[in-house]
Image (cartoon, rainbow, N blue to C red; front, top):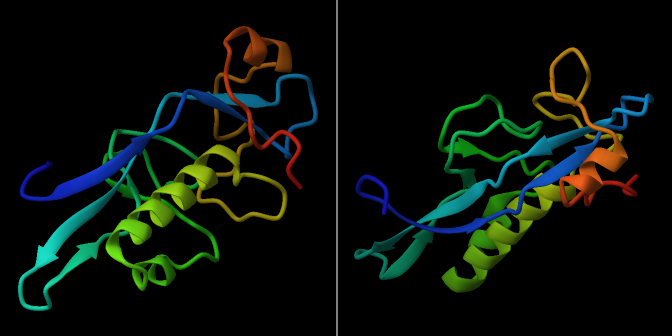
Length: 145
């Protein structure tokens, strides 16, 4: 519960993303765990659960987020959350959390249009592949095109 709202959430592992825009050896950025949630409430009038759009609940910075605050909506690209919301509530929650987590962990690749591209002008703390492995970071966008 946060404020007067209830949330269902998942937490990502710490992870790294490989930037397709950087060509030198230091082309990875690390990210701490993200708490991804959707709000849930029961509508007494319609007698059904209402599920919100996926957000990152903790203070967080990522290419698919507009800033670095809490409770930011996650850009899901061309996927529309309303598609999942037509499903029964439990399936909608699972689908939205899965899509949002997948997008944060492995959605960044060439051809995407993020809020904040992974380039050396906007991001600090670049790592090599070896440093990513030493820190035991998951990197799932490594071989995506």
